[in-house]
Length: 242
Length: 122
Image (cartoon, rainbow over all chains, first blue to last red; front, side, top):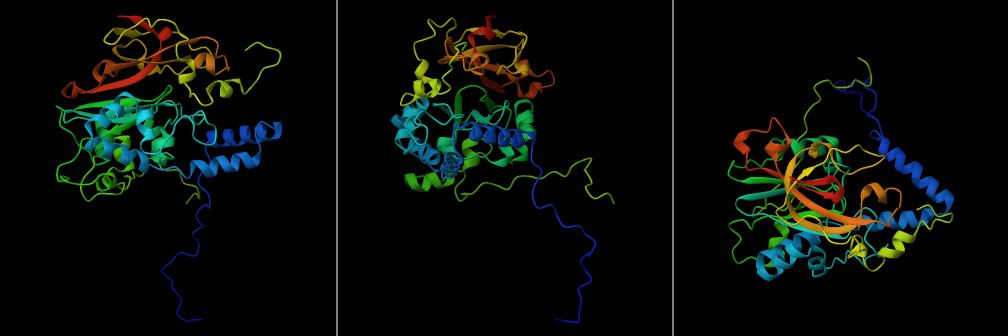
């Protein structure tokens, strides 16, 4: 052991909490789940298999759907008219897929593909809860579920999109889709310049999850979601009372 | 709903292999509104459960699609699937929803769905 002691760090700093705060709804979910298991509506093993299944889902099929539509106008038309049918061609069967065979309980089988144009930009939110087209997009990102995003996007869409790095001129109509009933939405952005001659696989790479929610635009070279902006609280809560 | 022996899985059985809302197709009768109709969102009292967002109440929009038939959320919350109704997608001008929405962005719109009971001809 070295004699030299590092005095730079603060020995009195309490350790950071191991888990983040659990919301009321998470507590409610646990209570209902445990009650349902106790009553024998489903088993703990059913729940584990279900959870593992939903975590295998991701946004790749939706990215492929958009890339295919960019290359094939007939497929684009099908996607706009019948999203559930168009999903079959990218390997997603909304109706007969595991584990329920009738759509997942909170993801009803009505997918609408919202096609952007140079004068129309769609963005998706669920103000009621956090409805999300999970069969084709996977689990929603944390920020999508926050009351902050849900409350503000419907009322101040331009400000929220600016925080995601998207600023659009007033000539472009921003259309917010609030999915509070049985329709689930994905956004089909316009194909960006600089992608001439690209294959479906190349195009799918730039259609990120954020592009499919509508808070980002596809760009050649950008294949990952941008880092979320973090705003410090104006009146922060002090847990350790200094 | 008010059966002495309620089958909790009846909804799942109905939808298996068909999908929800597809399993209610053709069960709501003729649609009252058509694409392009101007409609006002009624400001009805909320009885126990609703999905009709308060920010749309009283606003006038236009029907973009008669989307599907399904029991209303107000019924489905109690597992009552016996009275499917038409659902409509309605678009609004943002400046008609929010008093402070900047007139510079008058092109902006919002689209969401309603059941027939929440709509009246405007």
